[in-house]
Length: 336
Image 1 (spheres, helix red, strand yellow):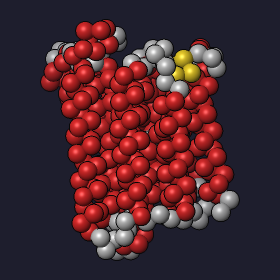
Image 2 (image 1 turned 90 degrees about the vertical axis):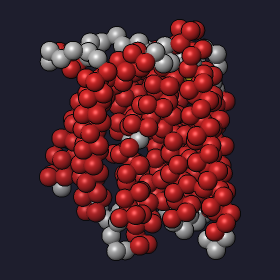
Image 3 (image 1 turned 135 degrees about the vertical axis):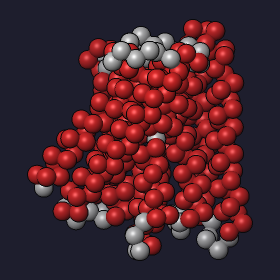
């Protein structure tokens, strides 16, 4: 047990260092390309830091062990556990990070149009993905159509997000790099090549740290005799979502609320469209009680945030409710 705990601590440190390098390089990339904070957070950061949790279900389904049922459980649980974690625990931790400075009545103030767009796309896509669970596996045509629809939804999301970027930059929501790039501190010039190099190195370190953390979590969970589905719904997403959590906490504490929120909601759209599209095609994708409970909590959390979006942001207390929803899900699931 102690070996696994040491591994968890070491990999957490790796993730923290990598997240600092990643956010630093991403800010400089966004500033150089003159794109909005919304694009930087919702697309670049969200997709980049979603790679660790994206790898888990894909590898489990496509190249897992010889136990097909076990692979499918891990795949489905990981696909649905990631949006659950982002919509509940990640938003709650982001609010908790500024609770001391802003108070319960304080607000996190992302650019509202982009936030609403993210939430609308996620809610619509996740409802569609949930509905697909009730389509029998024998109906391959309708399942294929639903899967492709989710892919199209994400492509449309990218187009609309990029199209809104120019206007946001003109309105003062352009990405600003306030801190000196880490590569520059090593004596390297600041240009697109070094920015991309630092970004790639930090991303590789994020993936390495997340994989190491996953291994440690799996070791602990096996010693505690946790089922594969419960492991993938509850434990693996905690590890794989660490990059988003850390990046968003770093950004929100620096007052970059749009990038902080967009990093979470953009990842939710990515994981609420493309990953369920894979699950619908390659797994049973059935409405098991643990899965349905997670889906309902995820949708409740996303809808709750959407209902509390105002022109001046989202109240800190409202986001802490999302963390409470995660605790509620834990209690319901672990009592079964």
